[in-house]
Length: 115
Image (cartoon, rainbow, N blue to C red):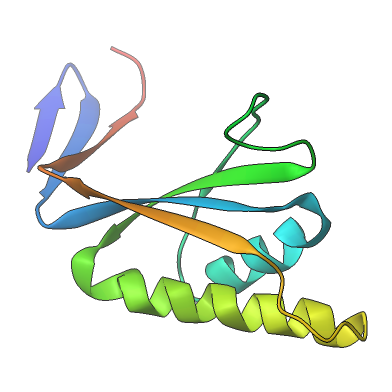
């Protein structure tokens, strides 16, 4: 939907059947992960955190995707993890935790200009 009020364009899009992915990964290869997501057309928000849930040296990424895109994201994360460890000559994959939360509704509101 597009609304125009006082020369301000507001775009309001509502998406259904979405998932919120909380991706917890080691700081050491978070750059590879975000690059892989961007190359796949996904954008994520990086969240700083402290406490018991996320250990020191780990980062949380928040990512909203449609249900049918979850496997694509997991493949991107898997490949980024393999690539990172191959470059470091490590015999194992990096640890990435992915939490999926079903969303009843996901809305994106973008405002332009001032009223």
